[in-house]
Image (cartoon, rainbow, N blue to C red; front, side, top):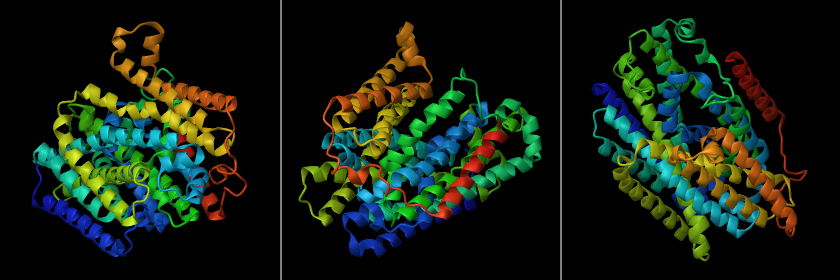
Length: 529
């Protein structure tokens, strides 16, 4: 229990009111042109700042709020590798993928796959995406919201219900534009609240020198041995980028923000800005986790489990008022992540599934279906709450790993499909089905690996980042081999979605900013090594 006072509750209340007012304001302004472009892609007139802010805010979920600090308290800064690599992958999104996405005029990632390959690949990605969103992102975010409200003295179920209803309401009202603009505000609240913890924590310890002296030196090493069960350097360098390409460059949940840009330049600038923002989790989530561990070593803070790191810092170090600000920031992160899932899921359902069944639907009808789909997700989320508590922690962890096991084949067909025109739809489907079967086999085997022996045990026990490398290589081989053994695609039809000399639109400023970001990442890698 965080022992909140009236001023903390007031700060959180003001935050909720502001989010609602912004959503209503945005909805009213865009009501005159409520077509599918306006509702699902914000009218395609978003600028770089709101795009970058939304990329950052929608990405920050419960795994960041609790997981980053908790893992850092347990093992140090190595968990920040995923955040640093995100900066590199966002440059890949801006410079490589964005030109094809915006030039093709697509609304969804499955639609892009249809343009590049076939209707079957579109249907596969549509179904996989919706199922993954519901089983993982929606459920875990709702649960995390309930936990935060529980820490405030509110019943878990009531808190979870508040998160679902409030977020669903403003997402339904305003569509993507409301989501993106509320994300921008939530970014400021999140960063401000999290920075407070870092600054006060370091000051309480006596500064950076006191922190580095108070814990083992290994806590400040980003690079771990190959045998490390969580963050082997080989997995970080070769495996994590594969998952990053899928998440940052091909997942509707993220890419929908750049699809809403007014042009390629704004989308790329937004991606670069998002890359800079992804440097912050090291400072605002990972370092606080190490601070919590240092304080626990001095006996000033009790950590029952590593995941208690951030909540305990809030309870022990922050005065009234600041607790409310920090909790508002945590809720902001969860709500922005959940609203993005609701919007992306409803977009895929409406445009990739419903519109295929009812191709003659009017623009107004599609917007209505999109709103109803969001409402349906809200109700599903409410129903899902009662099952969350009945799922074992182990099974819930395995559910989250579904994404890690389905992402390599999707990354393969997108990345190679852009650069190699010879790849066809039969190769793409064979690759995705092969990847899906191997991924599910790994998931099922991992749950029961204690009963396995020999090669089967190794297959299910290998680090998931190393498994991602293996799966990616297999999927690439299948994609290329099947494509070469079957007929070549119609090159004229795929010209807009494959590489040619007009694909890259560059500016000197973006090149310089991208170079600076790469230097910052390299400097962090060197410092923490």
